[in-house]
Image (cartoon, rainbow, N blue to C red; front, top):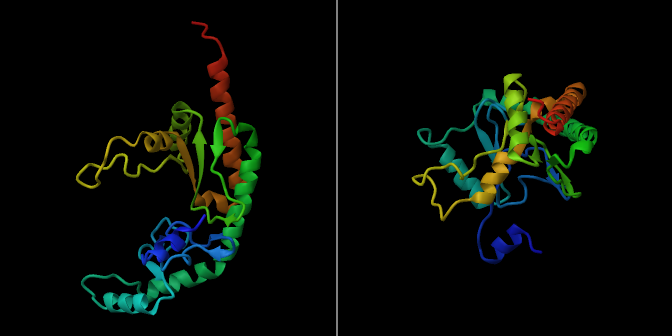
Length: 230
């Protein structure tokens, strides 16, 4: 099957690759952000590389590079990184291969530790050719009640678990055109549980969150299986 880039280029269409949450990841040995005519990175406060705000574009097209340089000179319209922000990013960039490797190792540990719960909380499928960056790790719960229980209890204890991204299912019609309800997308959102990346930088923290989720779900389903004595 041809790739998106192959199909687009046959039709003379440029590809903008959003890699804002995948900095450091790769697919088939090629870094994410390097597939499209332009790759886009984000350095916002929650990202894998952060300078508080701002971002970067990646391209090997001279015409795109020249247009970007001209645009960034328009001080009233563009907001290029300052030298101070760039200085903050340089040591993070040097550490990126190692931090990406650590998150990947800890995700493997987490998935193995929770493998007995895969029917209740199914981890996102990872292609064998991929080395993800893991801005977040996702699961799909077997039902909405399980996902709600997990995210509700984690919020109460201030743990970095959250529900799925709302996407366009909740956008008003003034912001996005809709042709009917996106029922499958909305169901996936309601049953998705995501773990934010900082906890994946530490082996002990990863083991702890895996044990916390396991104990919680086992307790939840044990209580549901017990007969009502009232």
